Picture 1: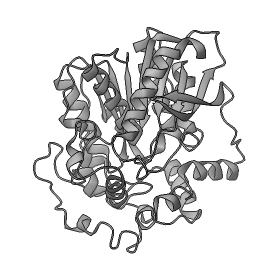
Picture 2 (picture 1 turned 30 degrees about the horizontal axis):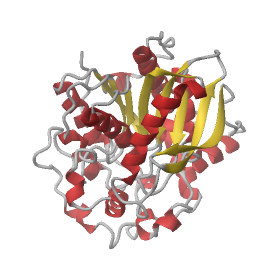
Picture 3 (picture 1 turned 60 degrees about the vertical axis):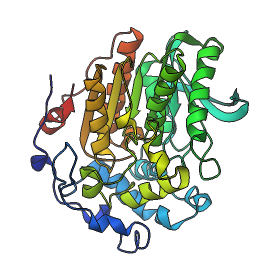
Picture 4 (picture 1 turned 180 degrees about the vertical axis):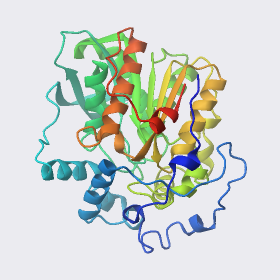
Length: 387
């Protein structure tokens, strides 16, 4: 069954707090202004004005703005890696509300180094405190456009998956660009998946129940890892969770136009990320341009998107592409929230709901009973879900 509300009803004018200053993108991605309101060749209709974030999301965005970060496209990669992050903004919001900022105590975590593909990579292993195992295993890849980000910055998403899926999560710091160009991050992602299959028992995991997951660039890596496993004739993951993935090699979709100046991810940033990791020709590689890949034989896949996100259209298109290939896909676009919301469960209710959705989908794939449903979703939220 499919549910969809007219996006004309749920998209409103952008708030000033979401807009970059005119100088943010000057000289970086000047083509953004030249993109037509209706993008030919898409299936998602004309681009619309960006939506307004809900109050909880806006509080995080205001907090992020207050931290004084500089526009990423004006920085070197080394400088960009030192900028305030949405995780910092969430902690600031929680502190202002008098709420704890410590990690969720329901999950234990240990940092270690794993040997993959002849390289040593930092990793964080999350283990549920409920039950003795063996637990299912989820290999998780952080976001950051393959250039920035880390397991530390994306701790909230990985920890939430471990809690809600009742699974061991392996979060890896894969090699970053431009020091390591394509396909370095993709090679590390697949090698980490192989490591999990071989070493699951040593981390209280079940080698027969291994899934892949990720956010943004990591959402791309999760799907691409399954593509590589298929190409190699290797064991496929039992499920895929892809949260607002990079799924196309271009920046001209309707959501790119609508959210060209959104926070914390905008069109100029995506152009900057692509430039640091791939050549123009490599953007069409099926590991980058996922919507052009062959998904026959793929496992059940869950795709989560944010409404106020340049990547929204391609995430929705990826779901349709997979569905046409016979894949069991559940896709949901959460209204009123921005890119990076998934790890913000302590401050944004929609993130809590998204993590529960992700956990229940993984539990179902692992053969476990899903958790009881939480509070009823709002009308617009329900209407934007696709099955």
